[in-house]
Image (cartoon, rainbow, N blue to C red; front, side, top):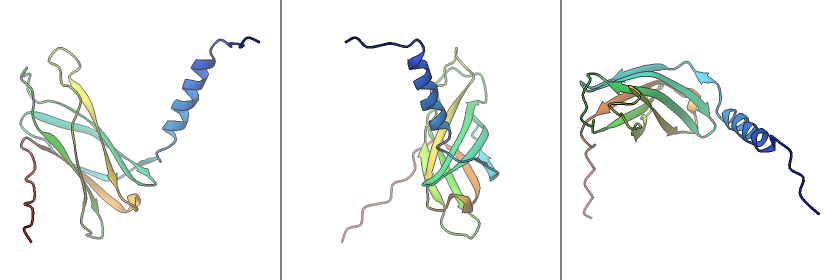
Length: 139
């Protein structure tokens, strides 16, 4: 017995998967956004989306000046609660900023928290140097 292949079956499956994955995050949240760009990197278009296990933060970065050298560093993303709890923090990188390609690239960060709707503002900061590691305790 031979398999019956329907044209477009694979395309329908892919469309269904993409539709369902788009629904896995909640609606866009209207959190205030604080961006702290550097002299080399601009941060813009930051948005946040609720999820049952945290907050998804997306945005774009671009070069401030038309430089062809690489930009080192990372983005330090913080979710600040309105009730002054300690912030939820994560570091992330962006895609490749090619001198010949697109002038901007996207970044994504996931802030894990059980109460994403209580985050009042999101802070995205460019840091050229790595964060200082906490020294190991000698007990």
